[in-house]
Image 1 (cartoon, rainbow, N blue to C red):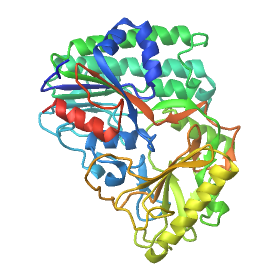
Image 2 (spheres, rainbow, N blue to C red):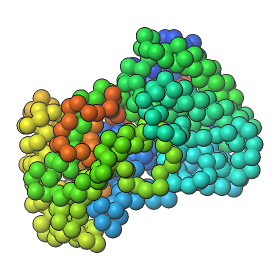
Image 3 (cartoon, one colour):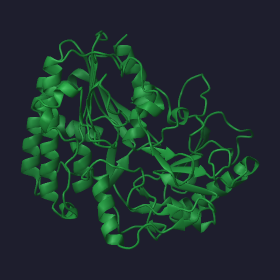
Image 4 (cartoon, rainbow, N blue to C red):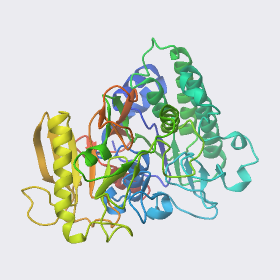
Length: 479
C-alpha cells in the first residue's frame, strides 16, 4: 500500500489501552475493526517511561527523555525536595507537530505538558495549575466548550468508594470532550489535530486492567458508551478530510503486585533521610493521593503530592522525588547539594548496589535500571548516553546497551536523573512506612507498552517502535 501524503495530521490517543484490548474492541465495534484491518499496528515501547508527560515529551519533541530532561510530570529545581512541574515551555515543544501560530493551526485536546496559549486551539488535561480550560478565549462562552471540564472533579473523598458513580463521571467528561473535538474538526481550520482520551486509563485505575470484561456491574453502561464513543470517533475521522490518521496509546496497564517505595530502599542503605509526610492522618492522605492519581481531583497547585514523604535534602546523598527517577544530591546540581562531584560515581555505585540487592535479591522482582554513570563492567569510561541493565528471574540479561537506535551519539541533558528504574507490575512510590507493600496497592499499574496504528501507511520496522521514532513518522506525514 502506498504511503498516504497529506498536509494534515489527526492523532487520536487512547492512552491506557493495550494492543490486545484494541483488538478485542475491534472485534466488537465495526468502525474500529475496519480501521484496524486497513492499517498497520505496531507496539509502542516506552520503557522505562510510564508517565504520560514523559512519553508525550518524546513524541512531541522527538528527543529521548535523557536528552530533554523530562522523565516525569516534574523534576527537582534548586533542591532535591523542591519540584517544578514541567510544561511545553521547559521542553521547547515546537515544530511541525505543535505550532504556536496566530490564527492557530494546531489543536491540542487533553494533552499533558501543553499549557494554555492563545496561539493554540487548546483544551486542558487538568494536570497544570490554572483556571483556564479552553483557548482561544472566544470559544469559552460557546457550547460545547463552555461545559468542558478536563477531569471528573470530586467534591468529596467518598467518591473513591463509589466506583459505579466514578465510572459514570469519567464517561460524562469524555463524552463532552468528544463533542468539543467534533465541533473543532468540522468548523475550525487546522493542520495538526491531537485528541487524547483519558477514559481507558481512568477505567483501568478504577476497576483494574480487565475493565472490558462483561460481568462487571458497570459493563452495560460502559459498552453502551464505547459504542457511542467510537461512533463519535468515526464521525471525527470522516470529517477530517484527507488528513493522515494515526491511533495511538502511549501506555497500557497490568495487574499490580505491590507498591515499592524507592526512597525506603535508599534509606535502608543510609543514602536517604526521610521526614514522614503522612501525619497526622495517613488514611485520609492516602485516599486523597489515590483520587489524585485517578484524575478525580481538581488541577494541582503544587508538584508535591499530598502523600509524599519529604526528603531531608541537607543530609540525603540521593533521593527519588518523582516516579522511577533517582537523583544524586550533588553540589553542582542543587544549591544545597552535599555530594561533591568527584564522589558522584562512588555514590552511584552504592545506589546501584542498593537497588540490585533490595529489589532483585531480596524481593526477587525483575528490574530495569538506566544509569548515566559507570556502575559496573563492561563499560570502562563515563558514557555520553545512558547505560541499561536488566534483571529477569534474578539474572542479568542485558547490559551496556543503547536503548535508542541510530548512529548519532546523544547528549545528556543537565537535568536528566542519574537513574531511571522500572519494576514490571509494581507501583513505584515515594511514600509509606514499608519498603515493599504487597497488600495496599492499586488494582493496576502503568505498563510501558502501547501501540501505534497507522492508516494507509507503509511501515518498515520489526513491529515495535520507540516514541522518538513515532515522532519521526508523524513528522514525515506532514512533509
